[in-house]
Length: 216
Image (cartoon, rainbow, N blue to C red; front, side):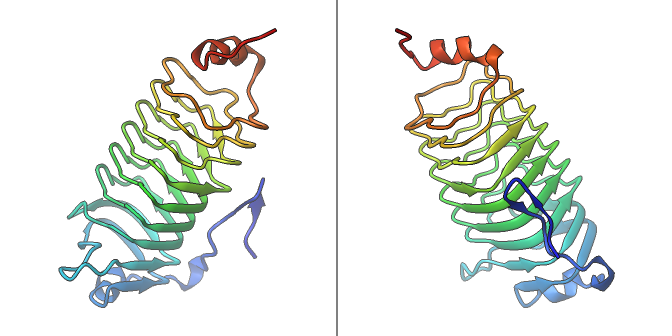
């Protein structure tokens, strides 16, 4: 049974059932219950524009042969120690996935749907999450400098000990989000709503200045 952490549901993977057939299965554009390591992933978008579907997989030390991955269906999987920098995951569906120690510099998640996703010790500097919708997501010890969250829904998202320096939060929904322990130097933009946002006492003065809050 999947475990829960503050609303996030862990990937539902039966590790004992995984087979080393990722490459062979991928010829059909769909992969399930497979492992892959030390390789460049095949193009995740077919020549006809059909997105790939990856379910219940474990990927380690993989990279992208082609950054185009629009509309990728990635569910119940874990990606570790990989390089997915500049991957274009626009309008993708990513659910119950864990990214561990993975480079996602400049990755594009515009209009993507992320649900129960964990980013742990990842590089997400200059990542684009414009208009993305996140539910029950956690960022832990991640580099998010210069990330663009314009108009994203980050309601309930937990940021633990992340670097959000110069991130753009213009028109972002931060209802019930938690940014305690994060570095916030040079945050840009004004969120659409911050109702229930949890911060630490040492962040209060900085946020009052950055968001032009009036204290009366």
